[in-house]
Length: 217
Image (cartoon, rainbow, N blue to C red; front, side):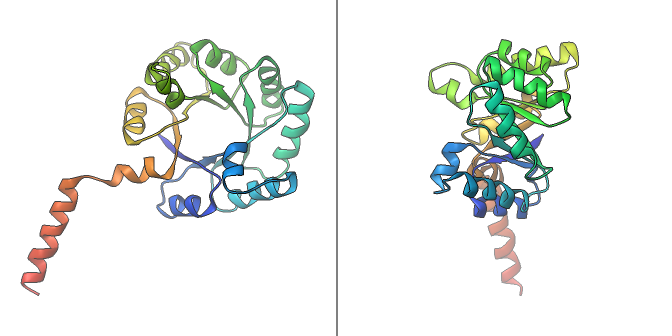
């Protein structure tokens, strides 16, 4: 399973990268705004800064909702760095743009996916990644993990190459459950990754080892 971090915060990206387990980054206009990154030139520069920290794919989202606008923005984003993945919305023109970029060998990430049918369309259009938002489904009392299972089943039926990128991951159990279900990638906050380190028996065992060592040294 690949680990992506869902943020525009460079310090958090560096921390995850320094752990040696980071495979990529996803971000969006909301996360950029949260870090105070505004204005087209500043946003584009920030994407390059992120690419210079990580070695894997970096999803950069288009703002346009029409095909021509998505193509124009996506081509500009793709020129920034070879690690850039064009993030497209799950709408009719988004699927059309996905096919356009896929035919050109440009990586894509179809986002805001909430149903198996949407995921099937993204795969048919040649998406590199499809991003089902499990946390947002959980927020409305719908089983987000079941969506991961359904997409995995469909993709395995037809040997689609599209990778399932479990998005809107909120906590460590989301990560574990998505790994059990066969999601190819998870993306979430740094806390969802570092939380995997924690176990009280690890803490207690280490404390005892150190105490025993200090008794004789």
